[in-house]
Image 1 (cartoon, rainbow, N blue to C red):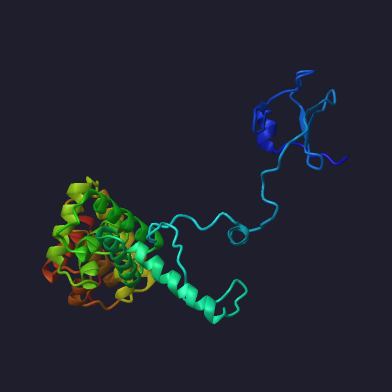
Image 2 (image 1 turned 60 degrees about the vertical axis):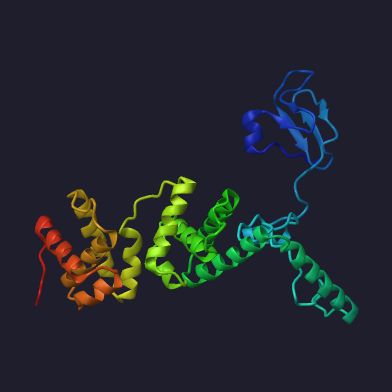
Length: 322
């Protein structure tokens, strides 16, 4: 008779769970050495041979998977919850007019699917709140795609908008402005290098109006925003300026020294990132006009020069201006 012993977790706890109770020992000899026969579905005692349980039901799947992709493909529990979908699961009738085998359906079935699609669309858009949510989710997907945001950031923005929709502060305000503010909050929470200007450039808003809606959501949702740090935007600025990796590495080291010297407190994160990148570029003999760096980092040249002089003086940096 082929027998299988418990796995490590069961061995360590000497406990076997059934739908009714937990078996910890043999009721006859009080032994904790129990084995499981997968062929018969029986739990028996090693010492006295008593069959403790003879009606075990295997609740594991009948299929096997060797990686995450196979597991997701063979699982029949449906897709996970998605906050970017109106009904959380994205259950829609598509427009391919194909059956499960990829074959075209008959004209009668196609006409029936067309009517069902119209009925589904009307059910989704029953009132103004539902229409507003559907329009906002589509806007989050559009802006997130243009900013190359991760799925996690987009879902966080969708969760924030669902909250403000539930609170009721959407009434009388621009949906686009609230969506943009939700995306910016999500970027800040996940330390994504997206500034107010980056989000505003992909909408019809200006920076002032976006900042106003950002403060409004922070006030009503009582969110504790993490402080912006220059590390999250340095890589983006270095990529835009086409700096080699050595410049970025040296700039990160300079920033660490500046933090240890406590000269970064209260400074604009973009100005700190611009200053350390400018210094690292000079040290590596990389051409970098001040106006290009200031424009890329969204600061003024005066601010860049002030941060540059402060870093060089306090940290005693050697700059080759030749």
